[in-house]
Image 1: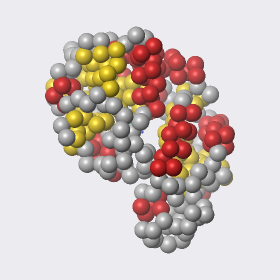
Image 2: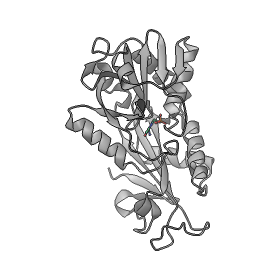
Image 3: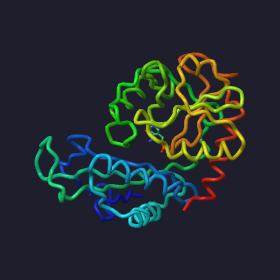
Length: 286
Ligand code: PMP
């Protein structure tokens, strides 16, 4: 089946979708994005993603070219047209193009580019890695200083992921001033005793939508949560470690820089949080 994608209000076959070569998303990475997961044909945490999108646009002084209602309708229509049961909806909004290349932003009334597409991921919630856990390396965080804005400047996270693959691992945790910031495309956590430890929110990390939900569920389940800095050495000594993101939900980490975490298999807390998160997300999906 040919995938149908959304481009500026139109639903078109992916082979016919067009964006200008002068688009600032392409030339300057001048764009923001969101990824929303789909479970049982429904959108998980759509509201959270829509709110963060608004914030990303505002922080970059970009217009808001689509209303939340239209955004929701377009997400649902793409899920329907592409017959997605489990998968992802990717959304990107750029500052558009005024037909040339210039560092200076184009006039504020320049039409922005809004693109959406689906990714079909049957069994998204049953990833085998969730049963075994993943292995991560640590790597210096060389990204820019506004990681709270979800921009499409993803070259360094890609490099980090490639470094992890080259080391025979699955992902990388990034380190700044001796402390873990986050994973290449997820938020990072360690568990000591019954305490879940994760870096506090700031401009240094993306304010994960999954993070917010998981911490809320953890507190509701009477788990202790501490939002603070932690080092990679502390992480290596932890009882458990895990990451969260819209596409991986809660994913146990069982090895950091070759050091085994806990028993080397997922512990109690991360799998329990994954279960709660998936149950609650399915219930609340729209
Ligand atoms: N941090 C980074 C750097 C990310 O790229 C992502 C996923 N886009 C996350 C955290 C997790 O955010 P969310 O739970 O909203 O997917």
